[in-house]
Image (cartoon, rainbow, N blue to C red; front, side, top):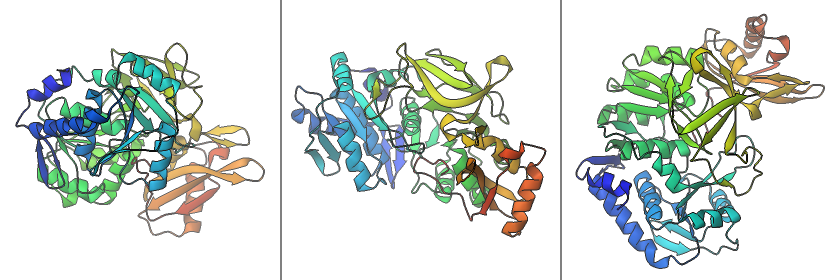
Length: 442
C-alpha cells in the first residue's frame, strides 16, 4: 500500500468533493480509483503506455490520474473544453496508446515509438505525467514529469478540514497542486457549476468555502461582477493568487472587497510543480521562497529553480531552459528586495522590443491602473514600421469618456512617470478583458 492509499484510508466517510450535484466521500473516490485501475490493468503490457484522459468531471479525471500511478503508466490529462483537433494533436505528440473516457478504455492508433524520455522514466519504474503549456508565448510544449517524484512532494501535507474551490482543471499544474494539496490533507474540493465569477460566488456561499485559489484576472472578473455584493463570501479565509503577476492596485481593491480573507501569493511552474512560498504581507506582491526541496537564484533578473520534481524534458521543444546540472530557467523576470523577497515583474517572452528598448508590460499597466475609472488594462505589442513594435493597451473602464479623451488622458498620466518610449502609442476600449482556458488574461 502506497502512502497515498494509507492517507485516503484514514479519511473514509469524510467528504472529498462536491461536483455536478454529487457528494463524493473519500470512500467513493477510492472506489473510483479502484474501478479505473481494474479497467486498465488487463490491457497493460511490457512497454510503457501513455493513457490520454478524456473526462468531463474533475473528480473522475483525478481518480484516473491516481489509478495510472498504481499501474505505473503515463497520464495525459486533456481539457474537456479543448477543441478536438488540439486533443488529437496532443495525443500525437505524446504518443498516446490508450484513450480513457466515460465510455471505457480504447487503444489508440499511435505510430510514435516511445521517446528516449519515456524509456528513461520506465527504467525508474515510475509513473509519468505529460502536461502541455498554454501556448501563450508560442506553440504548446509537451513536458514529461516523473509523477512519483511530483506526488512525493505532498507526502507530508498535514490533515486539515478546508473547503477549496477547484477552478483549474487536471491538465494544469496549478489545478493538480490545488487538488493534491486538498485531497491528501483530507479536505474537500468544491467544483463550481461553471468556471465563471458568478458560479464561483454561488459555490462559496452554498458550501462555506474558505480557500479560493484563482488568478488575478479571474479575481478581477469577480470584482467587476459584484460577487461580494451578490453572495455571502464571509466564509473565505484565504484567497490564493498566482499564474500571472498581481497588479498592486487590483490587490488593494480586492483587500477592500474581501476584508476577512488573507491574500497569499502562490508560485510554481509547469516544469517544476508548485513551490512553497510566503507572502511578505496580505497587501504585498513580494514573496519569499520557503521550500526545503528547492534551490533558487536570480541570474540576469531571471529566476532559476532547482528541484527534484523538475520535468525529465520536453517532447516537442528544445531544452535550452533545462540546464544539465538540474537548474530550470523559468523565464520569469523578478525584482529582488531585502530579506530574500522577490516580486514577479513578468515573462521574458512578453517583453516588448521598441527599437531595441525593452518594455515590461506590467510596469506600464501599473501606471495606467492609477487612472480613476480604469477597471482593468492589458499592455501588449503591436507591429510598427520604424521601431518594429509599438506599445499598445486595452482598457476596461467605468468612466464615460470617448476613445480620443482616453488616449489623451493615458498619455498625459504616463508622461513623467515612465519613459516616453514606454507610453502606449495605441489605446483601445473594451467591454471586458478576455481570459484563456488557464484563467490567465489573453
